[in-house]
Amino acid sequence: MPETEYESSTLRDQLTEFLHRRHLRKTPERYAILSKAIELSAHFDVDQLYNALETEGYHVSRATIYNTLELLCEAGILNRHLFATNLARYEVARGSHLHLICRKCGKIKEIDDPLLTQSLLHRDYDGFSPEYSSSSIYGLCADCAGQ
Amino acid sequence: MPETEYESSTLRDQLTEFLHRRHLRKTPERYAILSKAIELSAHFDVDQLYNALETEGYHVSRATIYNTLELLCEAGILNRHLFATNLARYEVARGSHLHLICRKCGKIKEIDDPLLTQSLLHRDYDGFSPEYSSSSIYGLCADCAGQ
DNA sequence: TTTCTTGCAAACGATTTGCACTTTG
DNA sequence: CAAAGTGCAAATCGTTTGCAAGAAA
Image (cartoon, rainbow over the protein chains, first blue to last red):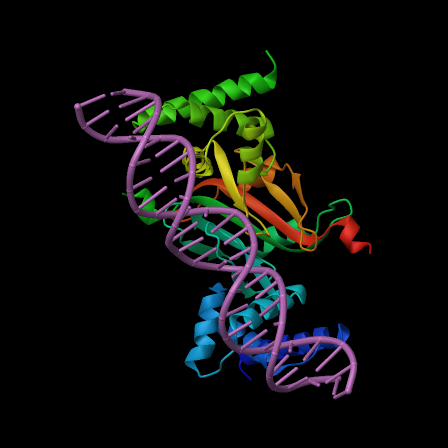
């Protein structure tokens, strides 16, 4: 069984468990949105998800997408990010996030750093319970710095 | 001389130098906005700055505030952040930023960590030139976790 | 006097909201 | 069937933009 399918079914189970625990309904829209989010996997925004679903003939209103993405964030399945622009971006939750953000062209490069994440999430924050972290390094990318 | 005044004049000089270098004009609005930004110091948003200026009888249009804050970011005097909400927040640039963000009530607590910042800014990022960093830890604050 | 800035109001665009209709439990 | 969820369109609201009037160089 391919790893992505394994992950994907795990996440679906995670959603089912979450919906059950909160007495919320298991609608097809919610699972369709989760599947597409997993498929897009890297940072995606609401419109990309909307278009991807539309392309394969599956129609869901934007309002539902907004609702569901918020739900998936609460379930800890997705993380929501706001970088330079005012456009929310989502990604499947993984512990480690280190983003190199060019403040000129807005390009975002992602770097994995499990060690940093571990150290950020396992400190004592005096009552605050950490769930996930996101570190952003702002600067100039090679292209923008070189001109 | 109090430390804040010292810092404040340094930042004003920094702005003057920046405007000179870029052949931009030294308008009273730009200095008024910088002064108020320094006075607010912690995270503030456009409206807080606007109201603070308005309260003391100094009128500047929002458009000018937006323009100037962007300028101050380019000058490296302020940093712009987007946390949970879609509202840009600014703060006087300091190397270290570690934010504890409650994903329920949106409260932001700031923690200083010069060591973390140093380690983030002095790595080799393969062509990318880091300028400043911001780390965000998302989770639940003591109040929201305890209910 | 030339060009940059400002202010105002209109435009924009991502997100939210209200409400009638549909579906899940 | 009752309550929750969806779709649609209108409303919201932070931010951007166009342009005429004002100020810096």
